[in-house]
Amino acid sequence: MKIHLTILFTCLSFLSWSQTDSTEVLEDYSNYGEPEGVKRYTTQKVLNQTPQKIISLGYDYTGEFQMPGIRIAENITQLDDRHVNQVNVFRAQLNIPVVATNKIIWQLGANYWGSQFQVENANSNSFTKLLNQSSLVSAGINTTIFKPLNETNFLIFQASADVNGLFTENAKVTSNALTVSATAIYGWKKSEKNMIGTGIARSYRAGRMMYFPVLFWNKTFNDKWGMELLLPAKGHIRYNINTSNMIQAGFELEGNQFSLPIPSNQRDLFYIQRGELKPRIMWDKKITGFLWFSAQVGLRYNYRFDVMNTYDGKENNERYFTSKLGNPLYFNISLNLVSP
Image (cartoon, rainbow, N blue to C red; front, side, top):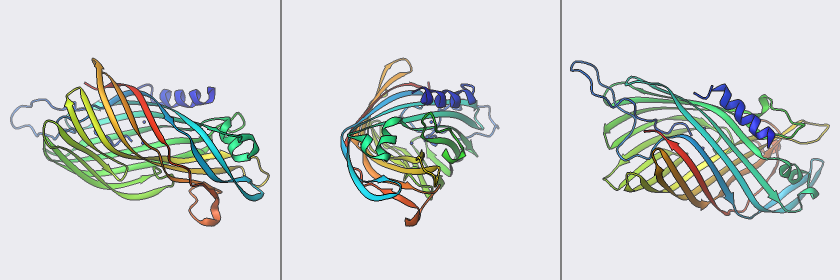
């Protein structure tokens, strides 16, 4: 736990306290009137959109599931099946606007995602023994720029750097644990209820580094219904009970590549390529002022759980083993400080 907190506070300190996905639309600081003759710029939100989270602290509980096909040891090809009783996940996210004008909004952020597996009879298998010793941690920093070009067009740039791994006392953080992601989007705001964009992303959300096209589309249909899409990463249909009480239904793809120290004379690290698809229902409710409560329930569907011999491994001869994890239910709760 001390190692996890050290990683988290190091990331936050790097930002001087100035997050999955930071391509979420940022808080609207530019909706102000301007004198005639001055060039006007589009804003970055649609009406009734879910509030932007400045600080978020959350907990996930994932129920029991099977972990089949685990390799017993590096020099032994025999596979083993294990049962996971639960996974406890702790999350923290910080997003702070650094520059907020009608011409540009620049945001810096930090995030922490730590997963603690509880595997039955873990000590009888070298992989599960290591997995039980500490949490799989992803902690990093990110930056997002929203750049309006005129009253209609805009650009979004996002980049993030994460340190990911299972860090024990003997496993130090190195460049092998680092992953870098980025997204670029060009878009059109057709009205105060509709903005759409397209672009390209480099991401580890599926557990493996991939390049893919992106569709960004936030649309409010009426006072009650809307949608918020950033495909293929996530997408939700939104129902506004009122301005401080919202329900969403949709999905998110979450994951990364994690370095994994394995005691061996032949190599120093393996890499877990972990991707999870989460169909879910979310509820966001204002408690008081800018403090909101959030809850979600859904299915944690295993998209990828491969252990590779090499960084960014893709070929079969680079795979140590793969496991078809079971697909349990999960729930999440969080407290969030949102923007005005």
